[in-house]
View 1 (cartoon, rainbow, N blue to C red):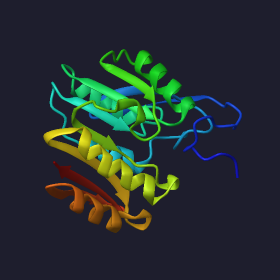
View 2 (tube, rainbow, N blue to C red):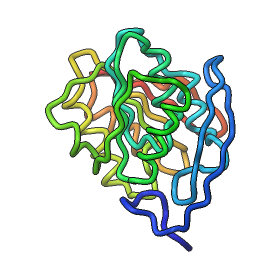
View 3 (tube, rainbow, N blue to C red):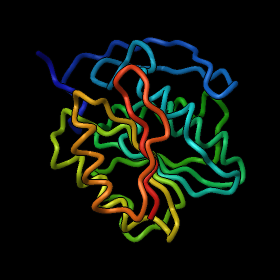
Length: 198
């Protein structure tokens, strides 16, 4: 078993590949690599989140655990008058996300290496998006929920995708303890989309 994706510097040998994927009616081209999450295709959970997320044209958005960028880049296309910040602990993923933004001509983004929220302390967002890194453990996932609450403006929203067998019931409980209102927006193939409103 090699490194999993939740590590700052994957030791896995590089093995880049490319594919295109249509998200919210727009074809995006991606370069991926070994040592990043779901490198062969965009995973079902991320696609479900992308299909459901509501992003205003002027929104300030944070994509937590951005990987090579499908969620954040789609959000940036929707928030065409806004700004998307994408963060990931994995330096290889961050480099790919930057390159994928450039490749697709998406300019209203910034990508940073960040251990949970270390690189965005004190900032404020309208929307936080996350397909949380389940393999990092429940403590990290729950920190994403609770510490994210502090970075949202009043009335801001956190959108989460999580699989039932990977902790959706405990994630829902944690979100309900932390946020004013939590709505299950969609459920498909064992994945839930939660919209948590501050």
